Length: 345
Image (cartoon, rainbow, N blue to C red; front, side, top):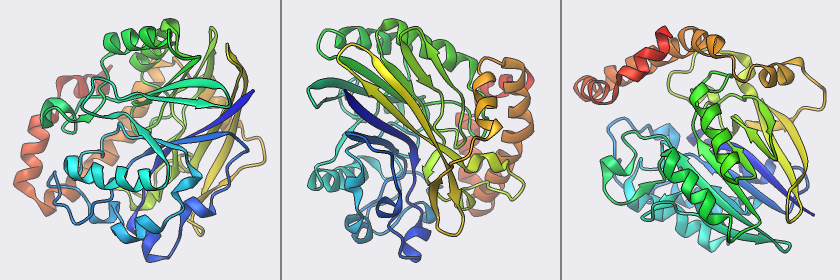
């Protein structure tokens, strides 16, 4: 048997450096043989910003980053919407540090899908990451970037990998920010990936936890929430946001060569004084609520209108006052009919 841990978003805000905190050293993970997380923010070695609105508080100095105990993790997924903040060179800066610490990565590069093949205690795994299209995608930046959310290609990739490894882990950056119910399209596609042969689909990006379900022979965790993260430093944050966003999950999965043999979600809560997640020992009804809310399309759209719109308006204002013309152009270019449709469904 082999045990793997998965956590969600890891964002190194400048406040960690300012307060001399090494969150990788301070956190306590459940016992496992391999730890994986989503590496959210790029740490540039004196690189130019790739986009006009990349925030300085979303990064730390390269020297400080190099000193952190990153080896708490064995691999990082890098398919997310911040990965191109400092272009290809910024990604290389980060992956060079990973190599020095013997940490693997996946989900970004020049291949159609940049898969990590990893053997752990004699059991082989393939890790696939992806992110929905946006300004960070290869369609905007050329032949290098994060792996895309293209479901037919993903299904074909999963089917082809089945011949080579014991288990396929899909690690997507998808869902709707601050909404604790998964997007109905992501529910459908996650199940299709299990049907194709994936053992698990383990999501992140919404910065709040979503439900976990057993589906056929697989497991789907729609969002693990933010793990190493300082939510009050996030663009668009306001004090009235749902306090449940402080919860996150470390998903501990056990495998033999043919199946998942154990599923244990460890729940954590962000500690505002320590600036790290601390394990929650008690059973909280909210954890079951998110599980039974999977597939509630009506509530999903209601929460978009109630929660996300306010956050986006604040974020728009912050961008606009700093760079009005660039902000206006950005929203005109990337605002799609599908975004508006979600508000009124």
